Image (cartoon, rainbow, N blue to C red):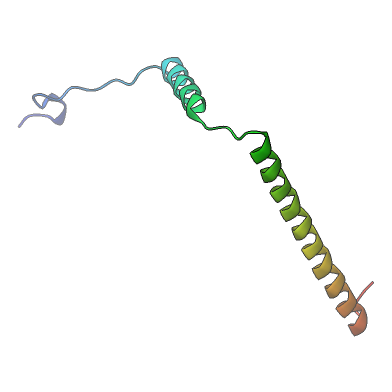
Amino acid sequence: MASSSSVAGEQKQSRPGFFKRSTQFFKDAWGELKRVRWPNRKELTSYTLVVMGTCIFIILLVFGFDLGISYLLELMGLGA
């Protein structure tokens, strides 16, 4: 019976070294960054305002919940 390591036509494939793989990764990443469509100033301003508006909305929402829960706890006599 033939051992599993001596099967005909099968060769152990070696991987490139760590530094070669790392270099290839960064080359590929740089190539992808070159293909990115970056926003212009008007789009960037618009996106920034949307993010800031969303953050302010979430802040006010959490503040409102906190205020409401604190008020309810005060009414029940459990507040500080």
